[in-house]
Length: 189
Image (cartoon, rainbow, N blue to C red; front, side):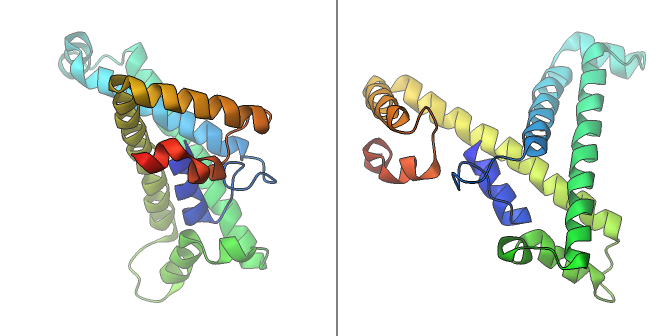
């Protein structure tokens, strides 16, 4: 999840607990990530199973899986649009901190506001939230390959387990970004 949090920080200028221990992770961002993960996972099954394809394409029947995908898409749109509108209102009022002022989305708002940009405000929000949703998929793929690497290399598993156990004892069970910067296991690979 740390890559999506990094992408979120870059895109919206909002830090999370993994990048700054004094900042709590935004609960709505976690809900957004969960909805995108559900959407991707269930949609993959929806596209591969003969029953789902047959019911949907031949009969036009919306199955339970179809409805799960539809609901998770609606949730990502709801959360993403709300976050974007709140951000835009704060920018309009001049209430953005330095991180947010320098974020990708703040600059996207400025580019969209220029005459001749050809992009509506709604289009800009949709493009931004699509990029954020795609980051969840990219992060999931990246994490899956990393887990596969750890799975097929028992020596990496052992080193990683020892290091994470020691670190989480020091930090009261929390993993912070600096843990990976200090890691001997991650530096060796």
